[in-house]
Image (cartoon, rainbow, N blue to C red):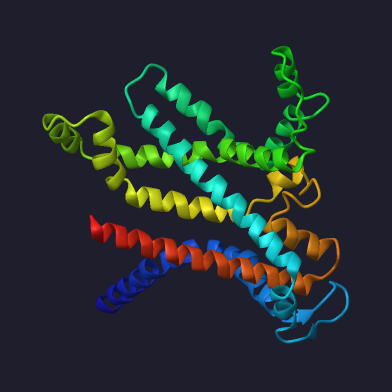
Length: 300
């Protein structure tokens, strides 16, 4: 009886210890098959010349040398950075401003939060199609509205400058609601006692925001900047539908370059090298942002 009790206890311990691993195994399997395995194949492809049909022909660092000595790569990289340097700060301040306003006790606060968050759950393709219709030079609603107030129609998606401007505005519109919610969570985590103490000291609303809210939001701000930078680097579907990278290559960014290099020209090895380069750039930028964030926390 004692032996049976001991065996039962042993089986119970084994089941209890293995249950978490059994439960997460399906997710780990999917993660390995759809994330890790393609990443490994992509890294291998980046050292080869491959058109998707013929066998791999390894060329060492040939793809990376061709990439780093290509004028079009550096032009595309600068174009992507320029988009990020404009879109990320705009998204940051718009989402922070919305979060600050909608954290106050105003009528219809939940409704307005839902309205501003709605673009974040809409598919990028649907967003691109809708804004393409709105910004159309001939049939667009925006040009019709401008015409009614006496302003000449604008070639929003035909002119290089206005196409770039349109991509930035639509991107900010699409992303700001999501980061607004993150900022709202950050604002609600700040103890009310800080504001009460600042009010007793006679601090103005701007002073309270600058001296209390903004410093205490630094971890949340760092998270928003990192997530938004990664998202901006991976921008593809929205811009592809809205402008197809045009006019010319004015709005052709990193991921579209990878996609068209691989699937339009059949240079999968070169496209894999571009993907690895994108991963390295994002990793370096994330480490820099984390270090700057920690340095800022130590200065508080």
